[in-house]
Length: 73
Image (cartoon, rainbow, N blue to C red; front, side, top):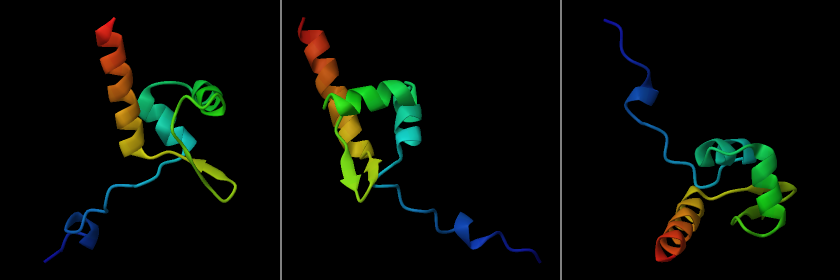
């Protein structure tokens, strides 16, 4: 009898930090737009060594804050 791969029983935990490419995809913006916003300090990011990474939780909070500001106008 064939058994499914172990990974199907043990899904990987959610990523705590994601790359610029994955963050841009998650936000539905280009990597260039993400990088420009990062350099301006508009989007939360974390430096890990030479890498710039993004927390999905922090990005979700950033979106929520922008939505509440937009709804207030």
